[in-house]
Image (cartoon, rainbow, N blue to C red):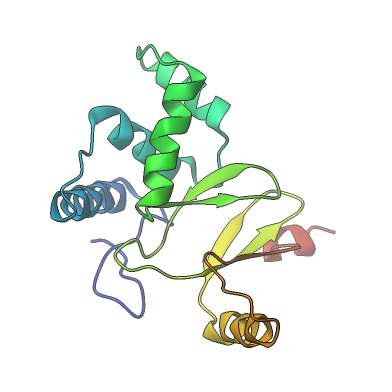
Length: 164
């Protein structure tokens, strides 16, 4: 059984059981087909590795994992695959540490808010329209058009704060 997002009817691979990852990859493939885009084997492999990582992962770690799986790939190839996945809303990029994680809701465009543990790196995508709406209001006051918004909040997850 796959976990469903509490406010949508699709699976998410942010809690990466093998069934959830498989379902997420099928949804990604369907999304690309609807958009008349090629979901190449490499793009699928990269997305699968991002999903299975369990926490944000860097491009060079993905490259190492591809090579370990017998795939010859160069950094530009992995970055192109990640750029495609970013453009399609299938992954998010965390600017603070230049890592990538699977999007919880790739089926629709949205602004992202992330809670990032500064001790262990655990990252959770959360849904809080209020923060993004307030950013929009502030931007409007300065006649600024937001084209992309991602908020990264660092702190300690419950596991790390309990261990201190």
